[in-house]
Length: 364
Image 1: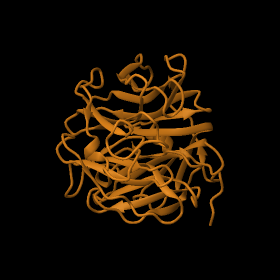
Image 2: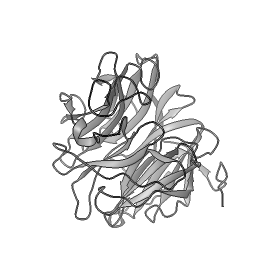
Image 3: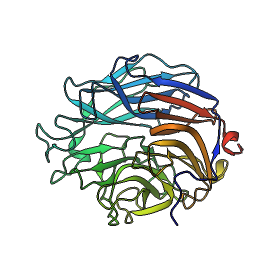
């Protein structure tokens, strides 16, 4: 059965906090896009984005802001890295068990459509940086391109966009898993790059086999209750449908079941966010998912909740009825749900927070 563009069971909710974090022009860039959000072990919120001079592959910097008061106020813009006329894209942070914040992103010269395979001047490159002081300062970039990108055929690569995860259960506990998609343009595939030594070195997992209904593109991953990993990807390309794609890995991101539509999750062809909020032994097993819940446009920003590892998403809350595009979820130090999202035709990147009770979540 095909879902309607707006689920009749959705409930409108009012956030505790609503603040525009990045505003084009005001924050020194003509355009700011591609939000990512994490909560450090000290409770600091770190919001990342691309500070753009133009479109997707213009002269883009990786920028961030910090909040030490649960999102009520935010610092000035910090430039994590810039590369002159080159494009820096897809900031994807992850908070390690040690408290270190690791950031991964790409650099390119020609953009997705024109990039070349391999590691020459016209190729895509991937870098990591880290912070040990809650994002106040950052290490020099480290080029990990040859560790996270296949040398043959593949042109573009993109981390996320969104966040990485550190596995907490099962035989691969402690593994950093970074969601990726690869080109060439029009022949996208999704996979994981992972590290078992806190990001010093990386391995490339297999791509997930397609289902013949478009390709998996921008992707996020979440750990399931038994230690398996589920990916959730944008559907794009010829034959694509307006539903999210999922697949499961039983070996920490090395291999995947074939992609399959999740007909519970409608989507207008856009990035989305998925997050484990809690485990069964720490208040109930809950996954959160945010996206523009529409099949006709980037609007109707919605958070859904699953209590069965994503097999169903019966709880649905509208957080922003207007224009809503890319988003990123985090669990804040006080248990509130934080969400960073692009609003109203990319006029701003807004942060909101919601108390667990607003989403029907009972705290232990």
